[in-house]
Image (cartoon, rainbow, N blue to C red; front, top):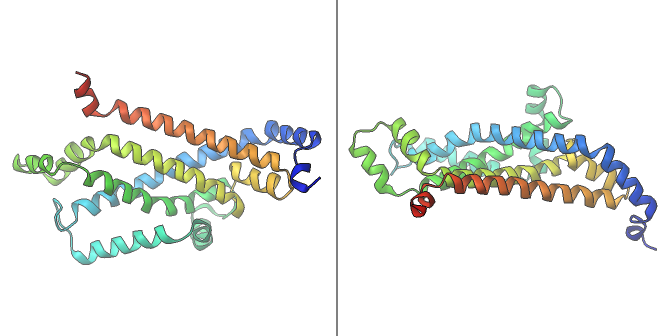
Length: 239
């Protein structure tokens, strides 16, 4: 009997069940808490940057200096290209400065936000660039200010796309939280690494994966339904 098969003996399954009852509730809470809070801060930082990438473009409603836009694109592309596990190590000084420690669920929020906000910025940029230019030109012809165009035209019109993209960001960050478990983070990732992989309790590892998959399905379902509910085009078609 090989090591993998031995991990699913009745005794091992009983141990996995015990871990499920004792460790998973807190691990699930930590994962949801870190995912939602990281997503919130990533949107707070990334959304204005995404708006700036569109409005500050040469063809945007308020062009910004070319050097500034190039610098912004370079920073966003650089942060997006760094692998997450390496990024965790790179931002340890920042994490310690903000949280006071680099270990634990709360500490993992800092690298998660740093990794996610450039992704969110690109998602917002993509959603806003999908807008019909005629809508923006009409608002400009009516004398609307830059802020009015952004908050009364661009964002409301692209809301379904933004929600779909934010849902994608949530599921991506959820995957990052699992990886942060290997670097001292908490949640289901920590359980999968410490109890499942390190102790050869593969049943625990697979249980953690199943719970993570179910979480992704929940977030995806909620985000998809919300996007459909707020889609004006579908409402017009229904009428």
